[in-house]
Length: 111
Image 1 (tube, rainbow, N blue to C red):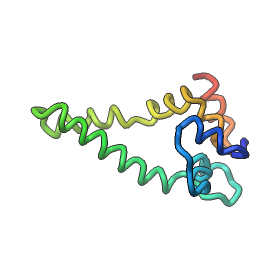
Image 2 (cartoon, rainbow, N blue to C red):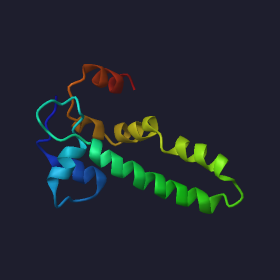
Image 3 (cartoon, helix red, strand yellow):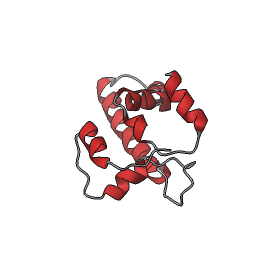
Image 4 (spheres, rainbow, N blue to C red):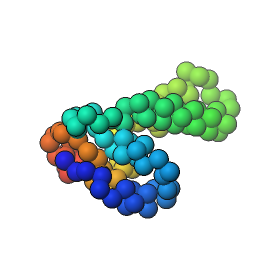
């Protein structure tokens, strides 16, 4: 289990400097990391909503003739856990995730 000892590395990767480093630490803490730390789940709740809104707005503008029944699965395909995980791995953000799941580590290594 990796502790976030150097949050500066993460900030450099994403190009943003956090005022509240506790939020950044929380964002990289999986619920399986059982150290009494708050996990990313509450932040994920808000983040998913924001991401869904941004993708929906973009697709609404790009595809003015598509009905909601077609836009919904299109949005879901673009806000996908696997796609977001691939972006995290691409930028080496997965190395900073604190967790207690060996299977998660193997899954990332298998790529």
